[in-house]
Every structure is written in structure tokens, then in C-alpha cells.
Length: 353
View: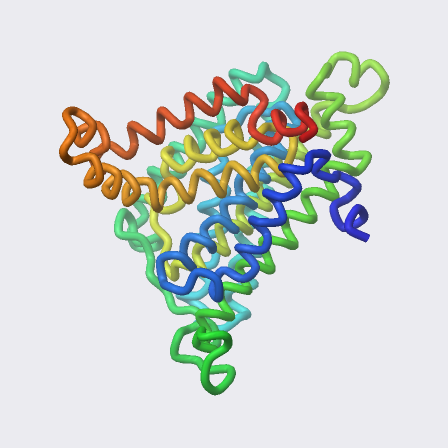
């Protein structure tokens, strides 16, 4: 049953299996295991970024397609929900219409970019996607009457997903039975379904053809596969799932802006998560996103504690200053690439431990 649910792609490593089960368990019960606004917010972000990173891995790790437009698709889904909620009201219909419209628009834009660009060499396609993503980010920032410009858009979500809504009296295991809890499980459940869907896709005949194209596109075309068609289909599918992740992000934040969804910093973060976890594995998205989001949220605090602990020693307090957390995040990334060149998942599977 488990093998069928995971599309036959078992972890193939005891350590990896334990890590994945631990992450799934922690995310599934995060509101009860880690009560507090910050910890639940971190868990929700991990869920969303797992889907976003996995959708990019579908493109890069399985299709061999380098793109810098993934945050653009992420943003389209987020703005779709924000605009629909602004103009249609705070109902669930607005969330559904906005998410589906954002995913459809992302897939259509990916189709246009793919048909005109995927026939060229990989580096030129990457540059084209970078140019288009930059143009869309500038356009969104300037259309202040529609998108809110640099200030972004704040919008209202259904009352059933707000903290004021009570779906039961009292508490559940010490957690308030309110709409915030429902909203978390909406995000968690949706992300779990999307991730399992991607697992199914990459282990279908379509996914195996993508791997063949990644390894040798000339050979794949020689035996009859239309390489451009498969690459365009993968691009559209990846864009639509990224847009759905963006829609969930907007629902969680109740806000959308250029810095939260369209910035190049997020694109770089996605690349780092893919490399840390391991390309072409899907499970790498789970490991990479979890480690990276936890580091973003807690590394600075840990360094502050460590700096205080060694305050009597020379040099170390300065090196462990909380303001230098980005430096140490970079060091951690370099070390992970050096010791895990195929990513954490790839290394664990090679060791089979």
C-alpha cells in the first residue's frame, strides 16, 4: 500500500526513510507538537516550499531544463488568489477561482515561452526565462492600481480560516480549535496531495521519457520521441504546480507582494534547496526545503545563543554574531555541496544506510 502511494519510489535508505517519516510526522502534527505562531508559520512555509522546490525539480532534475522564471509562476498563483479575493469577496469560491486562474495563466505563459524558446540551447532558454521573469516583476511593481505596486495587496480570506472562527468548544490537545488550525491543515493537505501527484508523474511513462531526454536528447529524438513537446509539457506542468504553491502561500499570509513571491532571492533559494536535497529525486525537495527554511528562521537565534556562550573567548563572539547568519548559511551550503555533491538524498542512497 505504501509503495503504491509513493508510486513505487521507496527511499532505498534507512536513514532517508527515517528522516522523511520524521519530517512528515512533525509537519502533520506541527500545531500540537510545536505550539506558537512562529513554529506553525515555519511548518506551513516548509510545506509550501516543498511543493515549490519539487515542481522546480520536475523541470531541472527530471527534464534537464534550467529556468529562472519559477518565481514568476509562483507569483501568478499568489496574485491570482489576491485579486480574486479582492474583487469577489472573502469566500472559498474566490480562493478556488484565483488559484485555478493563476495556474492556468502560468501554464499558458509557460507554453508560450516553451514553444518559442525550448528549441534553443539550454543557456539561451535560461536567459530568456530570466528576461521574462524580470519584465513581469517590473510590470507588477508598476501596476499599482491593479497589483498594489511595491506595497502589494492585503486581502481577506474566508472567516472559517480566521482565528475568530471556532469549529469546536475548548481546545484540542492544548490548541485552540479555530480557523487558523483549519487553515494550516488546508495548506498541509493540499501540499501533500500535490507532492504525491508529482511523485506519480515522475514515475509514470512520461517521467521516464523526461529522464531519457535529460540524459541524451538526441538519442530520445532518434527513437521517436518529440523532445520539444515533452519539454514544453514538463514546463507547463511545473509552472501550474508552482502557481498552486503560490496560491497556498498567499492564503497563508493573506498578503502578496513583489518581495514575497517574485524576487530573484526566492529563485536563488529554490536553486539552493534543490542542490542541497538532491536533483532528480523529489525526496530531495523535502530534505532541502526543510533544512533551508529551518535555517532561515532559526539559525540567527542559534548563533545569538552560541555567541553569548563563548563571549569570554577571543574572536569567536564576533564570528558567531547573529548579524552574520547569512555568511554561515553560505558556509553550510558550500559544505553540503562539498560533502554531498549529489545532494543529501543522493548521498544517502549511495551509502544505502
